[in-house]
Image 1 (tube, helix red, strand yellow):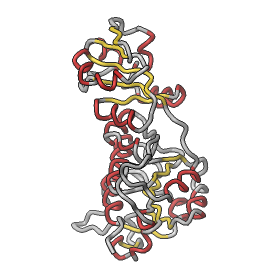
Image 2 (tube, rainbow, N blue to C red):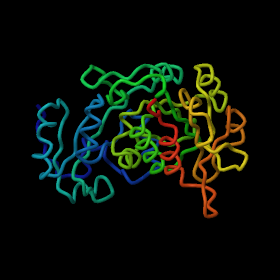
Image 3 (cartoon, rainbow, N blue to C red):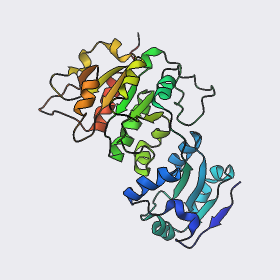
Image 4 (cartoon, rainbow, N blue to C red):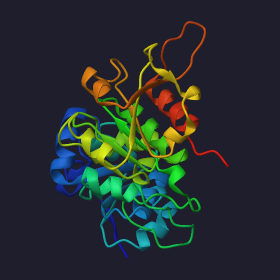
Length: 297
């Protein structure tokens, strides 16, 4: 059981993990280098813990100590209790959710390892499938559900978090990131995803777009999402193409690069009307994941 430690000095070195949370550039470099990420809010903290991430410490306002008591009672990690004023001076913003946790990162799987894992049958609810990056139990699924997503150049943390949330909700088995994608474990990405980044396994390519060869060798049909009029509308594509496919989406501003488009097996698009030629990438991902979902026989 963890002890509650009251801290009144914002410069206390024990609060180092939480300093300057609003400095995006600093945190993007520091958190991966130090092997940590920050979970914010009760639900997100619980989901990170349930996904198997080790907790380094917690930072709470006094009124949240009772709310998080069951979590605290299971922790060997220190729990620091501070006033809202001290929390704001440490983090750089008003922590209105009242609870932060510093979590230990886990090593990312290799792309080939994730593809192998994504191809397995998801266990039925109640089976032991616990672990970092484990898919939530949702009943048995067959090969018709073996869809993954590939994100190129997602640099906006909110879009990345929203896309992860859609992926988790709509049965995507895994996500592959180009080398320049944002960090799914950055605080804003986690917050927007509501912790879905903990339930969808992901990996990062070392080489791009050469790494797509590994996806194709694993038997996935690479479908590139683009508004180009030459692309095939999703609702006109043979549903069998979705049985083992990799849906590839590009950045908000530029979409997929020329290199990624050339590497795809087929270009696909979302049919639109009213003169609109594209959607926000987070919205587009949700539509694509829904449109390609397995259908009952």
